[in-house]
Length: 166
Image (cartoon, rainbow, N blue to C red; front, side, top):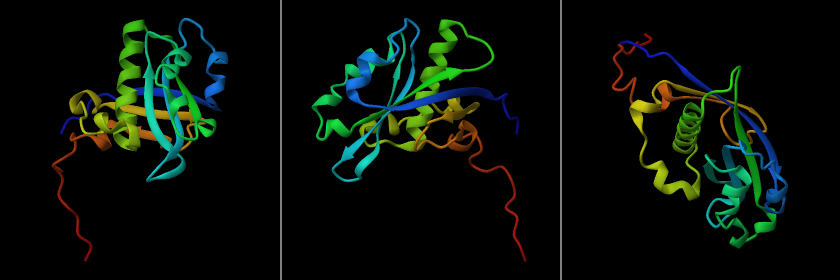
């Protein structure tokens, strides 16, 4: 079996921020990335991962504000973590946008936040097979490292013999 070249996406996480901090978040023209929302869920409890989203072609502060988290129960205790892609070079806008999309999809699929139910059920399997994410900084409850090779069908059905210990 041939293994494709790894597509490494590194995310530097900052936080936590409160909803009232959104206007003060950097709102530079290129303030794009991924974000996590933590708060109260009626089944899973308090201070749990509720949602993973992306801000692409609009700033993180603007995108998060559009989702009306202020209207949720216990919004004073909602926590936000923002993640920005980083690496040795600045990619083109097209590549940057694609990496934000791939990172969001794999993060949602692996962590299954309660309010991302639509995105959990479908995974662009072939697109994510070579994606490898490294989460740095304050990534909170996200795994520090995720591999599309592990979470997609690339290795299944297993094409290896099962070894038995005797």
